[in-house]
Image 1 (cartoon, one colour):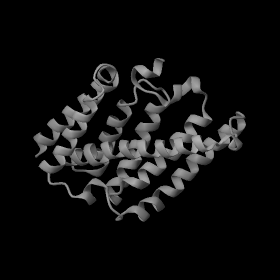
Image 2: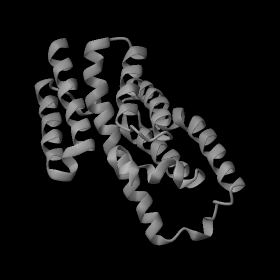
Image 3: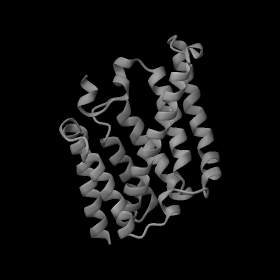
Image 4: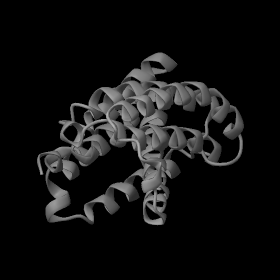
Length: 205
């Protein structure tokens, strides 16, 4: 199982890197093959829905665990935005609010890939939660190269969220925290720093 899990991690990791840096521009449907391969591994390993982070179990406990750290980071970012004069709640339109909903969905999908696949497969390789979390953090941070803002944020966030996922096994609290921090990050810091939170070749556009 360890060799199989390692091979699956290598295949999907390489596939995501290839997609980010090249294939998304020439063959965007490649992402569907990656997703199909990930889902196939769930059947191979007979993963249960709860183990993948779906369901109500761990939802409330996960939200409670993440409430304080998310609030602290959010307060810091809001304060930074206010200092820079970037905080304008009156500019929140219906279109922007809908955009936040879509961003939450994107964060949920990212956590699905990171936790349901990578963390679960890395668990078969490293066993210890701390090592699993560091490995997942490295994976998540690497996916955000070359963005100088997102690399450290996703590395640190990847570690924290993975530890919480291992304990609570629910994706929703992780996606909520990521969506809040990511949205405020884009608002609080100059666009010249994070380039619209883009990664890969898109960062240079």
